[in-house]
Amino acid sequence: MNGDPLVAHAVPHTTASPPSTASSGSPSDAPRSDGKRKRDFRPIWLVGPSMVLLAIVIGYPILRAIYLSFQANKHLDPETGMFVTGGFAGLDNYLYWLSNRCMSPSGNTVTCAPGQLATDFWPALKITIFFVVVTVTLETILGLWMALVMNRSFLGRGLLRAAVLVPWAIPTAVTAKLWQFIFANQGIVNSIMGTQIHWTTDPWAARFAVIIADVWKTAPFMALLILAGLQMVPQGVYEAARVDGASKWQQFTQITLPLIKPALMVAILFRTLDALRMYDLPVIMISESSNSPTAVISQLVIQDTKQGNFNSASAMSTLIFLLIFAVAFVMVKFLGADVGGSQGSSAGGKRRASWWKKTKAQPVEPQQETATRNSGGGAQTNPALSNPASPANPAQTNSEEASR
Image 1 (cartoon, rainbow, N blue to C red):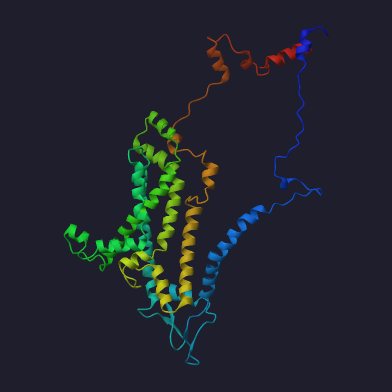
Image 2: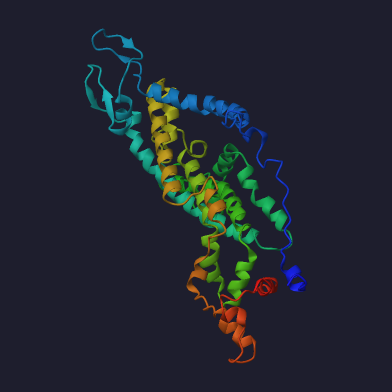
């Protein structure tokens, strides 16, 4: 059988792969002579200076404010009858705000009298939460509508996108003075409506004036973030939905909203945290007094600082920080605000709209039945599909025949 040509055909042609001489990793990943991998400190040198700068700029003020919040303000010592400064106060500064607990001249703890800043804490907190809920809701709705309009293709789209960002680019102090002129007693609003609404003194009118000004300024910011999420939605999804007979409303509720949810939640998170520390808009438009109808919790910190009570003001700042941290933690942990982008990078390709979950997948026919139908009848089948053990490679068949 040495002269059989099948023998020569059956000999497999193998080529030896050359040994790999280059390592895929960096030189720092190469093992040392003692078997240990060399540590690369270059990332630490690149990130280290920025982390040190952030620790100085952000970390030190926070730690300093927490330390001052446990120190006593300047007060009258009942034993000596003289004013003393400093000393460990424990939780007195926090209880001063939370439970309206003040110190009497005799050294006893009493309820704060009307006119003390502590009595304005809970009303200011309610007004702040009211501003946050109303403004963020309105800005999300308007921002989503503006983003949907700017996402379309039409003449002058670039000019519209630039014009929409103008209110957001104007400084807040300028915006506050502008709307203060608009809502004046003889301003544009009263002249157009033919009314005499006292927008700066009536409690509810003043609050809605601040809300309108804040929505006008910050809705473009929401639109910009939501538009970035809309740009990531593939157009093929909408084309497939139109082929399946989906209406515009179904495409919006079951395709657009689920796919832009990460960007939408990030926009809501940023705007919520910004609204919780609102200060300049109500102060410039209405009043800087702590008992004004638009007073927010940030105004209490400034007012307490102006009175020289730096330690109790630090306690108030710490309470605001804890409130913002708690809101951010809840939104990131439980509401899906993916700030770091890990959800979009890891699960972005696996995310599907609810529209596709409702469609039933067509059953896939077995390969054997497909091959039988393509052959023209039920009597002929593909032997490679009907017999799983039969080899599909002709070279393998010739090799087995030659060996036999």
